Image (cartoon, rainbow, N blue to C red; front, side, top):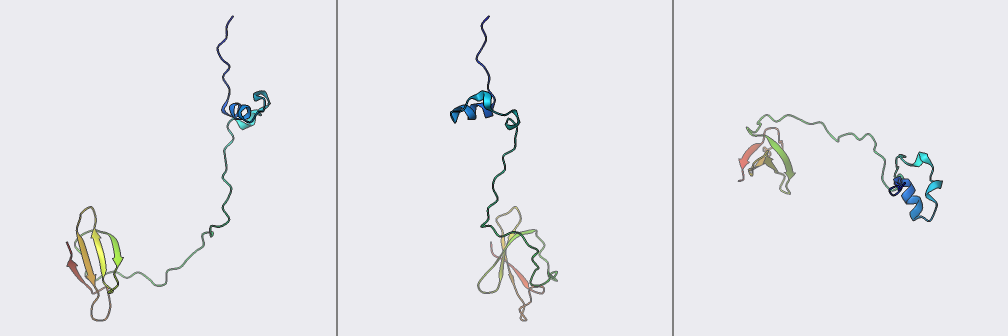
Amino acid sequence: MAHGPTRLSRSSVIYERMGLPAADCPKQLQYRPVHMPRRRDIEPMRDRTMPGPWESLNNKPNVNIDAMLLLTDGSIMCHQYLTANWFRLLPDEHSDYANGTWIPIS
């Protein structure tokens, strides 16, 4: 009676590639999860506090904003969600963004 080729588990194949007999492969290794070693050069997460609270804008834009970039002149360039439109938020004369002015850029 002819039999087909013997099917080996993945762990058995690895054992054979290392030059060890596949029969010596422990059954527990067949589905053992692999754990990556913890990197020691990454700083662990800590609770970090914001330097100040968020304030609501008194002059809110009539569009949804998804990205904001602080420019070197102190204004904020804001992207309208799901469009190619950009706006610029200029602070008021007291450097307050809550009462700032919205100007369309594109």
